[in-house]
Amino acid sequence: GQRLASGGGDTTVRFWDVSSSTPKHTCRGHRHHVLCTAWAPDGKRFASADFTGEIRLWDPATGKQAGSVLRGHKKWVTAMAWE
Image 1 (cartoon, rainbow, N blue to C red):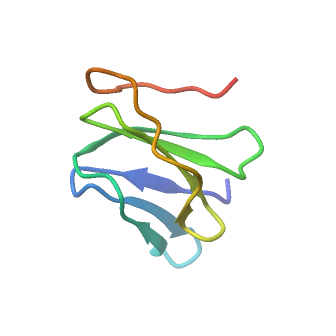
Image 2: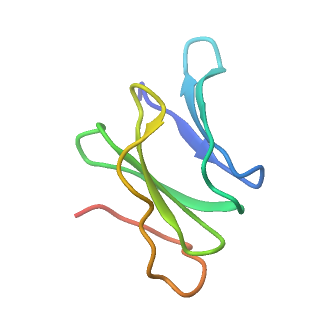
Image 3: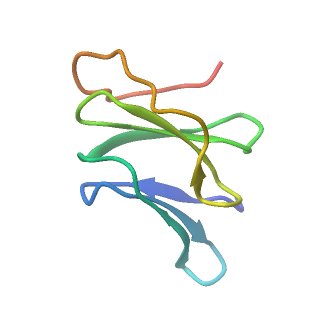
């Protein structure tokens, strides 16, 4: 694959340049550990969720957050999937 992203305990989401193994974008916004992530089927969006239950959508091309934070979960989110 040509796409690689990660989320972690440092509260960031990173989109990686797979050819150089360096971060292309480091995305900030989460205030707690990022527990899970998921690519949209078309690859144009990326979702991340954290320990507080907040879900954020990202534009992988720019590294910018897309839209508002999605809130509603009362506890952490540990898995996500796009339909």
